[in-house]
Every structure is written in C-alpha cells, then in structure tokens.
Length: 142
Image (cartoon, rainbow, N blue to C red; front, side):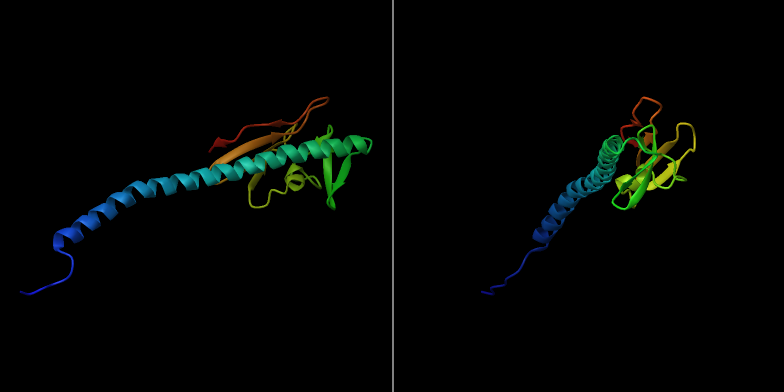
C-alpha cells in the first residue's frame, strides 16, 4: 500500500474560499476604521480650538484685557477677548491651538471666520462679537 501525505485539491479550494470570505468581511471594517480615524483627528482639533479659546480668554482677563497676549512665546491677537480668526494677524486661534497639519482658510470678514479642515471633515471658528463669545461649529463632512 502506498501511503501519501498532503492536501487534496478540494481541501485547498475550501481553504481559499474561507480566506476569501474572511477578507471580504475584514476589508470593509478596516476601511471604516480609516474614516473613524479621520473624524477623530478633526474632533481633536475641535477640542484644541475650544480649549485654546477658553485659555486665551482667561489670560486676557487676568492681564487686564490687552490687545494681544503671549502664550508659549507666541503673540496672539485678541478680538473682543478671544483669539482672532484672521490669518493676517500676528497670532490667531490657529497658532493658539497648535493646528499644524490642518488646512486653514479664513474669509477676512467682520467678524472673521476660519475654516479648519482635514481629510474630508471641517469646522469653523468665528470671532467673538462685542460682549459675546466665538462661535465654533460642530465638525461636518465636506
């Protein structure tokens, strides 16, 4: 009797089919994780902008409401007690929040509005008006 060892063709085909099914199920989950990571990045930037605005306002109050404050060696231009949204100013909310790696655009309006975007998501920071607070939108898909 001849004793052979190995897999039959049917066994190999079954394994290939199982691997195909597993990859068809796993790939969409990994793609979804990328979208979640992109959303998390913009959520992190949003939190940074909110915190930076609050910290700058507190420092502005403590220092007697000056036109500019200094935070970590960076001069930040203040508008109605909160960081400016105009890139042309010495320092804006972008600098205060440390938004490196994000796409920043401002409209130079009155009040100025800055749009922060990254990987298909964005939110806006609108300068504070007199006796008000800045408006910060929730992130939205582009």
